[in-house]
Image (cartoon, rainbow, N blue to C red; front, side, top):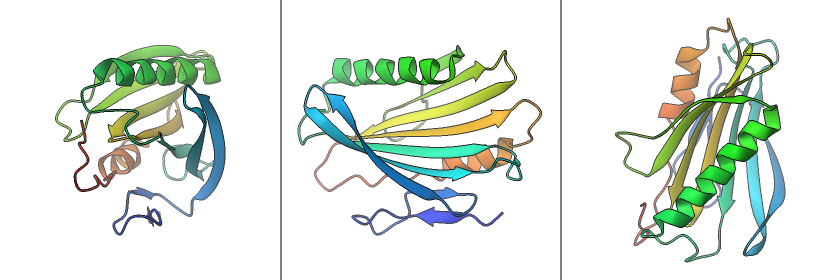
Length: 167
């Protein structure tokens, strides 16, 4: 595999590594703050040469101050909306959902199985100041992509702006 670093224009260091050349799409979400841009980065591997089929990273920048560090209820509500949307998008079953332990930033980890259990989507979601990150890896049962999936998740390094609280 040819792991490629994604470095955002506003950052100096890589945010995450994809197992090949990645694409980018921009869209918007309707939120309580109005239309909110969402950037999506993805690596599509339909043959499963990386051991998985699709890697994605979605980034949502909420208006400054909209997700204060002490707003755990708001962050929890956004996470629950993400979970519901992820389940609905694949018509799947939630297998587990937990706060991410041992992480320096608040996050969640969850897995959804779909297509009668033959496919899975592995998820990690994080809040860093007013930015929300959602990483996903899609695989088919029998794919041997554990190492690639973990490399994708473990090499995720969001930048915390000076003076911005991660929690």
